[in-house]
Amino acid sequence: MDAIKKKMQAMKLEKDNALDRAKHNEQLAKDSNLRAEKAEEEARALQKKIQTIENDLDQTQEQLMQVNAKLEEKEKALQNVSDRNRI
Image (tube, rainbow, N blue to C red; front, top):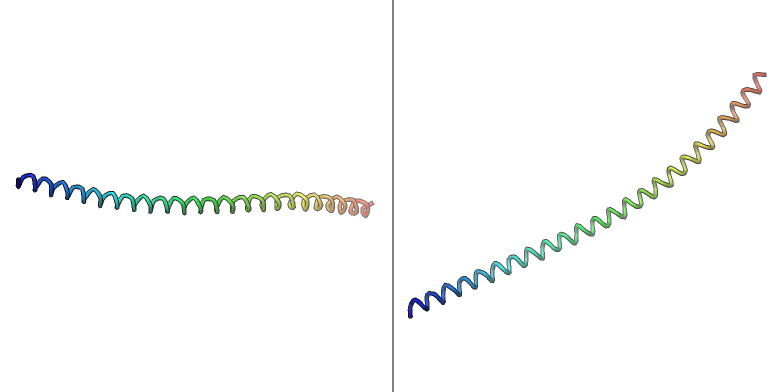
């Protein structure tokens, strides 16, 4: 009879320990999921920032091309004026 009681107490202790470990693991899983969600949110924000910067870069490159074209036109005009003044 004592052996049965001891066995039951041991089994109850094992059950309690298992439940404690399960609670602990569930909390760890919740914490991990929360960190993962935050990381995904941060990644989305960074992706949006990258897209904005890429768009700004495209616009700036287009403006640079336009300004360079105008500069070339002005240099050609200046060269033509210089050539006329030499003659």
